[in-house]
Image (cartoon, rainbow, N blue to C red):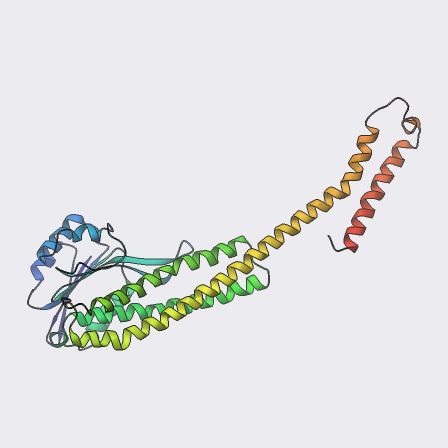
Length: 326
């Protein structure tokens, strides 16, 4: 799905199509535009879009995940970012991660969304309701809004994680959990690393703004980044570290719980082995079948041996319970 947003003075025109050529014919290069490519994995179509905007053909490979996640410092043709956004949606017991690419040019933004990014869809709806003069601000103001909404999304994600950790903490401290509880915490901790990457990307962008030849962000928008987003990132970073520390503590406690349960099982098996060891000895002793073993010919020999074995078992179990070994 291709969604074209054209920003003219006090007006927003939205056009949707599945055909690349139809979309490209609708593009007015004199206007500020945002082209959203949702679930669009057509390499040929992507190459057409890249060529239409006179971008480096190597960007096609970068869009198809042949480049590391993060901001690309080669900004001669555009500002390029391969993103991974952690969402609060759960898929296969793990947090869903939205992946894709953002390209910022002089008067255009192109986003390639492997799966639809709900943050972008909500922003699209808000832009239709709000009256933003992009002719005055420039299309880079939209990048500011996108990153701002990405950071706001993390407040929701971290709040959801906190609620999940509250429930898991009850399981861990109450010793109701099992190995699956440990893996839930570990999976959650592993997922949060995507948040770190987003924060690092925004910090990298703010650092790149100080380059003398950096042209993609205007001075008014730079001020917004420095005044608002950098503090926003710092606050989220502290919250992120707190959550990671919390998860690590719960994982350590749960590991101790699992180790304690394993040790208790081993102790019980050891005690059971100790209980039956004398019985094994008696059975082995009388199983040697020597000719001159007097008990073998006594009529009370068999019941006496059974009775002794039973007394040993009962006595051992009673003693183990008194010592709280069982």
